[in-house]
Structures are given as structure tokens and as C-alpha cells.
Length: 248
Image (cartoon, rainbow, N blue to C red; front, side, top):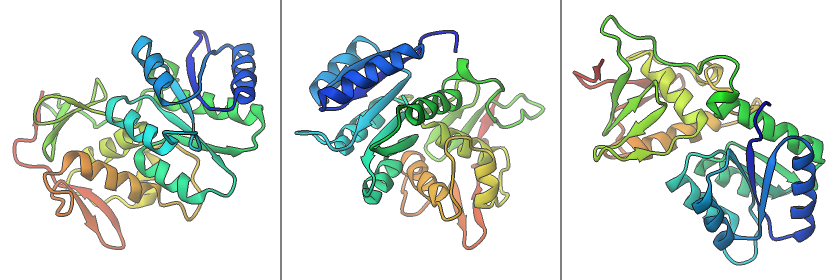
């Protein structure tokens, strides 16, 4: 990794902060460690990092609340730190939009591998191949109407009807691109997973369903009655574009 990517560590244990700051610093990262929400916001005001390592069990404002705050304002990938038994917290964190998780106690080498993996998937300059994107039509389509939003493929941005950017995780972008590149075609969960490199998935993982639910909250006029992303019960999902949904 040629550049020193910045990792923001949010953990109220001073020993953990010191250990991770030293370890990541020894492995070509710039590690900034803070003890909770107020210090995290101050750090973000100075510089937005490439990845955030967030302990979910903080004193005061908990990690789930901070994860929601982050997802509403930034697209920076979050790696959640949880207790080994906290499956509910992991599911909630993934629903909010975290990129990955690791359970305490963890081996620093595993954490380093997960940080590097998340960066490869989510930071454009860290990619070795281009991200999946809808193939251009004869008119060079790179901007697609999806529900009440516009997906700008080249810039990897989603804009709402007020032209404000809506934060997307890497998996959300990749799944949305896969659907948009196959309009009116049902894609199975397995096919959608093939387009996403955002997590290592187990055989019973429901990450695609969680991702679709998050996307609907962002793009649909009424997420309870989705019109852009339709469910084909037992088969998968499809994107139904509105007429005149693309431009060059």
C-alpha cells in the first residue's frame, strides 16, 4: 500500500487504543485513536479517514448510535468491534451499513487483514481492477434514475431529488449497479453476491436482503411499496426503470 491510509479508532479502552495505534502505525497506516463520540466528531471535522474502527460498546453514546451518525453523513467504511457473543449487534450494524466486523478478543493480525481487505474493496485508489458498473448504452449511459434518486456511475455517487449526495456503502453501490445493468431482469441473491466484494459471506448470510432494504430506504418514494427495486418471491430482485431514466 504505497500511501499511508488513515484509520480512525474509536474505543474507550486506553490500552486498546495504544496497542492498535502502535500496531497499525508499524504496518504503514496512520492511526488516530479517540475515546468516544465527541472526540470522533472533532477528528472527522479535521480529516475524514479511509476507514473507521468502531467499538460498539462505548461508555455514553454507544457505537450503534455513532454508526448511524456516520452513515447519515459519510461513506467511509466502518469495521465494527463487538463482543464474541453479540450477534444481534452485528446484524444491526450490518443493517446500518458497516462494511465488516471483528469480535473481541481479536488477533491484531486478523484486524490488519480486515482493514486491508475493506480498503481494497472500498477505496478507489486501492483497487487493482475497476468496480462493476452498468455497461454504457449506445448513448453512453452513465447516469441512471433509480426511484427518487440518480445514480452517477463514474463518480460512484447517489444523488437525491434535491441533488444532495446520499451515502452508499461499497456493497450498496455494487448491488445497485448490478441491478441497473440488468433492467427488468430478475437477479438471484447468488448473482448479486457475485457482483459484490464487500464481505466474506456464509451460506446462511442475509446480507443481500439487508442491503436491498437499506437501498429502498434511500431511493424509494415509499420504501414499504417499492417500485424501483422489486422482489421476485423465492427468486431474487429486479430493477424496473422509469421511462426516460438514463442520460449521457
